[in-house]
Amino acid sequence: MKFTSPDIQGISKYHLTFTPEIPDNSIALRKSALKACRPELQKQFEHYICWGSCLYSWKKLPEVQPVEGEFEGTTYKVECKWVQLVDPKERDYFIFLKIFFNSMMKSLKFEQIGPKVFNSKAAHKLEAHKI
Image (cartoon, one colour):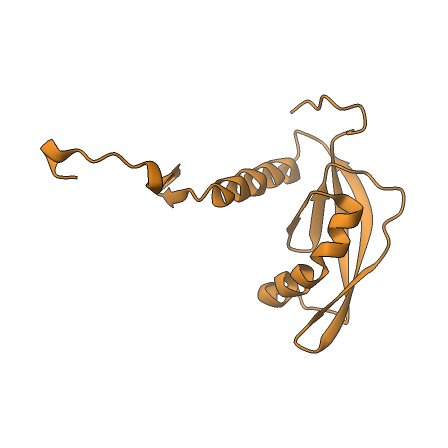
């Protein structure tokens, strides 16, 4: 993937640290805490994708300010530490692309049927075959 903007060097990977700590197996709690922090994260990154304890963004920021968000009465502080610029040949790059395209399909209201995705609103009826 090549970027046309000179400001974009590639896909930057950041490691997320939660305070209070959220165990790696508490996926739903991590998502909820990140959702509570979304407005602050968007101010810094504009567009980003989170996966597990990683955040991927087009932006490579020299310093990321910690953000806070409240979920179920607990205030979570999220710190993002830059890890690396993801090489297009690495597994993380393909993970990013998969998450990115899946989120696009979800926002377009496509539905997954097997390995393919479809727009059920644009379905065509085949009366001759009763489908």
